[in-house]
Image (cartoon, rainbow, N blue to C red; front, side, top):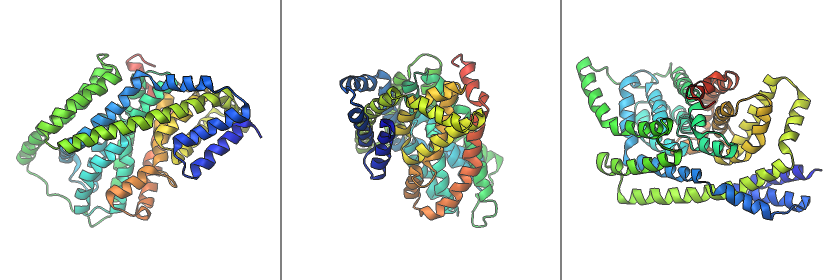
Length: 433
């Protein structure tokens, strides 16, 4: 049995035993070092150098900004504005929640922050209007993952860093797939609720009242809408790096949360700082352990071994790309999205390039795949988090989740994979692909 195969078995076993992911990666690395009798001193320096990049500072800063905006009350102003347009049709509150997740994701870049913020605002409204708990909680579980697709995405920063790609190109590559997912999730939710007689719809508003409320809610939402304009406009316009934009988003969110929306208090501010610091430490440990392991896998020629195994089954490019998708979905089911990106990028990127896939296109493919893995049982971390936030039993969420997977996630994945223009149009438009 080869050293690599033993190391992979060790990794799977310790993960199944519940060992924290960084330590599982270390266990697999030690297995290769001991059995392969390799010199580990250079690996430690390699892992340290990779983990000390300035671009990684953007991750805790975006996490801090998302936490400050979540506690500051920005999410509610976005929800109230979107509700004016689609909140008065059957299933419309679900569309409000999906679109609000996309908008908040464009501010925070975090799926967890999006689920916590928008879910806590929207789910009580939906339950009061007669929306089923299972469907609503399943929807927020999927929609919150738009925070991983709509830029600025923390996952795309990690992918670009590990894969040596442009952060801006990876950001814009996921925009159109993210919009497609918004549409598919909204339509699937409306279709599921089309025969539900328990849903209570708000009364239509006269045109003058509608115009008056729209003006007030738009004015109230302006500070929230300006945030992604500043962040993304600065990055796309070439005025700021992602790290500088993340710092600006933190500076902007503090006065907005304290003095405009007034939802941010001293304790909430302190909690946000602690959360961002903790997350930064976790990401750094994760990054160090994965960089060491992926470097060992690369030295052991794992990408070539995987490609040879795949091509021994078929040489049809369409089928090979589907096999890559299945591999990523399975990885997304058993690991969190951050770990999955850090581990698979060095291994899979050479494979997809050899299959003729543009690395920027692969960023979008990977983003959709890992999002799908996060709501696909048995692990489905976002499904369980959505269950906690929504107070819905998992068994009530499984059926609607399967509908969202079949009619929203899979169509988005297939379009993203086999229509490269959807992912490459915007990067090419700005000369980055």
